[in-house]
Length: 283
Image (cartoon, rainbow, N blue to C red; front, side, top):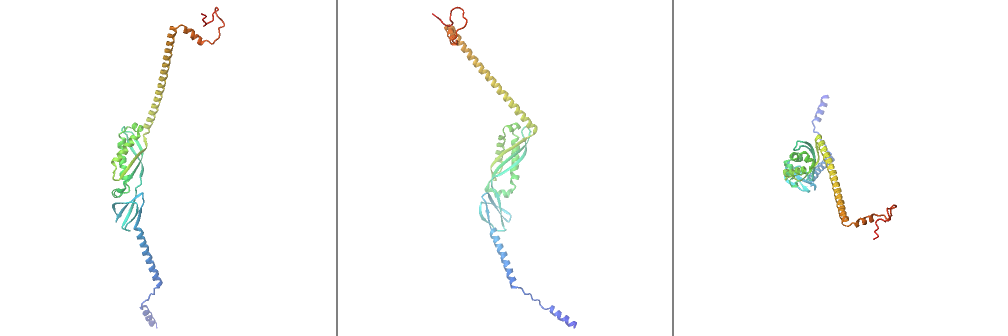
C-alpha cells in the first residue's frame, strides 16, 4: 500500500507544470514598454535642441573634441548623447587683485587694482580649447604682475605718490600690448590703493606738512612784501604831491592865505594883537 502511494506521487511530480499568464498582465507590460520608449523619444527630441543667450557664445564638442566654430545666440540643434554644448559668458569681465611691487628707490608697496576687459567673441572656442575656463588666472594675472613690477620699477616712490595716474597709464598700455589680442580687448586698468611701508608713509606726511608750512610762510612773505610795496608807493605819491604843492606856494605867496582861508572855520579868534582881522586884506 505504501509503495503504491509513492509511485502515484512520483508520477504526479513528473507531469509537466502549466503556467497560466493573465492576459491583463501582458497588456500592462506592453504599456510600460511603450511608455519607456515614448519617454526616451521625448528625451532625445528635446536633447537635440539648445539655446544660446545674447550674453553667451557656445562651443560644440563631439565625443569630447571641441570645434573651432563659435555658436552665436539663438536656437540650435545637436546630436543627443554624442555632442555637448559649452556656454561661455562673453559679458565684460571685472577682476580685483592685489600684488606686491618695488619702486625704483626700492620701496615696497602693496597694490590693490581692478582690471576690466572683453573677450574676443569669435575666438572663445580657441580660448576654451587652448587655455580653458581658468584663462584669467593662467594668462591675465601673470601679465598684470609683470607689467606692475616693470612700471613701478620705473618710478621713485614719491613720484608714484605725486602722479599715480602716470603709473596706471603705463601699466594699462603694456597690458594692451602684451595680452593676446586674439583673446582679449578693451582692457582698462585702475589702481585702487597703494600701501607703502609705514615709515615711508610717515616721512611722506611729514614732507607734505613741511611743504605746506613753507608755502604758508612764502605766502605771508609775499603779503608783507606787497604791503611794503603799497606803503612805499603811497609815501612816494604823498611826497610828490607835497613837492608840487611847495613849488606852487613858492611861486605864488598868495596861495598861503588861500590855503588858510580854506582851512578857517569862520570863527574869529578871541584874542588878537592889534586891530587887524586875520586873512582880510583891506587894500
